[in-house]
Image (cartoon, rainbow, N blue to C red; front, top):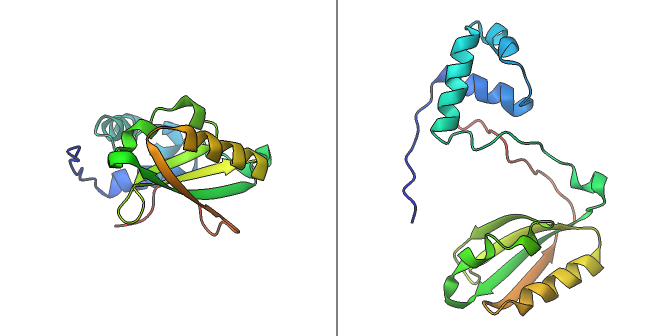
Length: 156
């Protein structure tokens, strides 16, 4: 298991995270005006948040349905020996898979994926089952996405 060190952040860091979570392209000068701090302070704070791993990367949030990916599925996977690491770097999965989670319970992992249609899903499941480490899959189709957001949430 990886050692996960907890990072302590203050109210200024939290406000910076809230602002860049809304729009990662917000200029440092705008953040400094909004928070009444210097641009250098904003730069140093964001740099610290990146170096400590609080900010993993700056990215975009894509509306997959606008690109034709209207089908979201949750796939339970039973993996030989419970070794789910094999799934992490498979290039074949990169187009569709948005998350892989090592879990407890009846299955070893859960995969969240997006597809254009059921034919694409069917091909994907068949590809998965060709993997020598995959013993079984269990697929659930999402009928409605109530909430889907990977950004900063207010836990403080």
